[in-house]
Length: 298
Image (cartoon, rainbow, N blue to C red; front, side, top):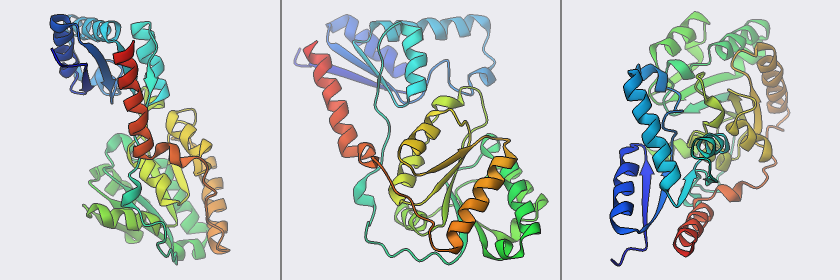
């Protein structure tokens, strides 16, 4: 046996069960990496499992968490949940960005108050209250209405389109199914603000979408609609990259949009980023390698 370590990364969480059997058969050290939760994932209840199936999922999950030599995950709240299930320490190593994807010398010329969201926007992620506030601002401020542009890059749910039409924003919206990655990165760097819409679902606190890290590296203000106590809000606050408002906090959205727009009008819509280098994939890879070494050593 020349194998020092086996690493399982899920979902699908069946890979952890395979790794569990390999460990039992060989005694090799095992690191279980959770990129998403198992029974605590936001759509778990929607699976409508029988009581027998639910109990089995929870039993298997606990076995994995107890028997793995090390466990890692991508956010602090998920780490806390897994730690409680397995009664053990769980290491957090977040996702990140690839610096080579970005041109830090790109000339940014922002002529419109452009709000960009990249990635899919499903029903749970549709920020209806945000569209409503934008509409009311347009009605009360003609200059704001003239400056506003909305760009949604990625698949959108029909409820998003319905809200844009209902709130009379459709003529200000550009809907694009997809761009190549280089174009997406460039558009992020040249937008006034970046919209991060989180899923309005249970267990949202630990959700940190991968795009948040590319948003950080794009060096534009981020406006997050989601849990103000969640891990996404934590990252944005610590890096000084924007603000988070609650899903239904229309008053908060209005305040933040007005503030961002005022800064846009005087050319002061910038971020004073702090500590984003910790989310560089090279740094994160080193952190994961350190976990590999720890698993083998211990």
